[in-house]
Length: 294
Image 1 (tube, one colour):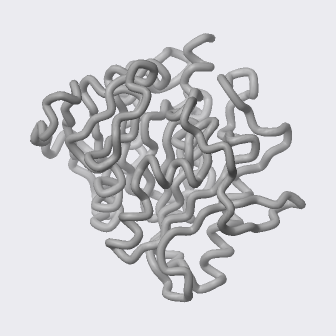
Image 2: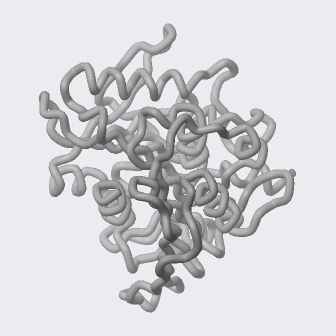
């Protein structure tokens, strides 16, 4: 049970911003919800990445931690970083399984994220054919939930440092095939790399689940990326599979990596608590490269 609770522990417990994102607001089911929108804020039908913070985080905090602003400017894309109520996402697990904060009872984040995407499309900002979702920790589990329940909305997904709940996997019936990137660290104490039978699917079993859903075969290629920062205590192994067109599944294993989003440009954060932060790759760039090529 301790491990169940730990998997929802946030990436940035001690550095979460004390103020919510003060960017944009939208009313959903009688609740005012907030989100940060990065990139060109005028009609343009741009690709949209929906990026979900971890437990105790915020959209603004995740933007700083992962460098989403730089990516949006460089690539002329939109990145929407919504705020979970009470700094948490209603990712489908019972509240008793949350460590730290839990969403208010009755929170419907599937409805919120669906409405947010619809709003950005209706405003002419986002291209509905190029909407992608990612998230870390609690936000990564929420990305899994959205993929299971609203796959029709997405052209790609990337749960990061998150476990795939066993109960969710058993009930998951995506309405269509969506390309998927899964990234986990082998030294992550809060989202264990190995499966917890009857509780969560670890990295390899989660990848196998989505390979099966997407009709993928065996390994197509596996490579270890250059160890650009030998002091970070970690390396990156990328594995691709023989998948049909439009059904790509990609595995990123951070060997020695902790409960951290990798970044070359951003400083290490709370490594004594969260484990090593890989500095061989820029995480946001790796995700965008996967999305745009899928």
